[in-house]
Image (cartoon, rainbow, N blue to C red; front, side, top):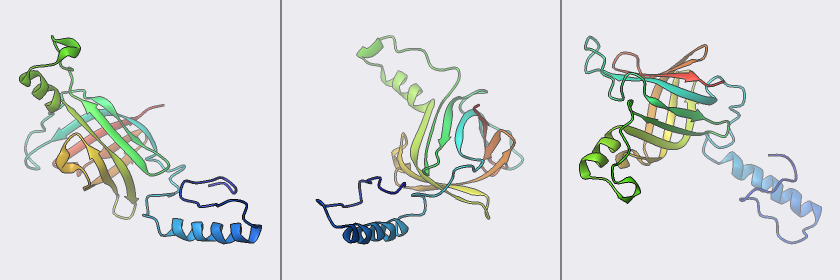
Amino acid sequence: MAAGVARPDDAVIGRAPVSALLVLACTACSARAARPPWVGTPWVGTPWVGTWRMAAVESRDSSAGPWRRPFGDAPYGFVMYNTDGTHAMNFSRTPVPPRFPGGDRGATERELRETYDGYFSWFGRYTVDTRKGVIIHHIEGSLWPSWRNTVQERPFEIRGDTLLLGDQVRSRRVLVRLR
């Protein structure tokens, strides 16, 4: 944060003398130091920051089993890792289900179920443990309510413009950097 720029949590009251402002600034600095590790983390220039297109969502029951693609051969969506430690993941099955015949007036239970099963979304904050090679997603909201306020840790590897999430044995997400 640049000097002199107000933050929502920095309290400056009235026209305090400069010495009082310095005390407030130091108090704000220590308050920021006590924040969770994902706030203010300098992710600028790190290889995972950016927008990634989802290219594959695959899983299997065992290391020798066949890969399943529950979102089709070419899922459509994006994953974003921002420099401020926030992230969002949104993708859908392909082919995308047809528009609801009722348009904006509603959908049948079956149409709603197909739509729900064919879409995935979550958002929140993230941290990275480079020693362990994992991205730790601190989920604040998700289409799946049971994932709200949970932590989802994913092994990751970056190969050029490809980001691999998952253990690559039973779970694999392939993402391609957008340019």
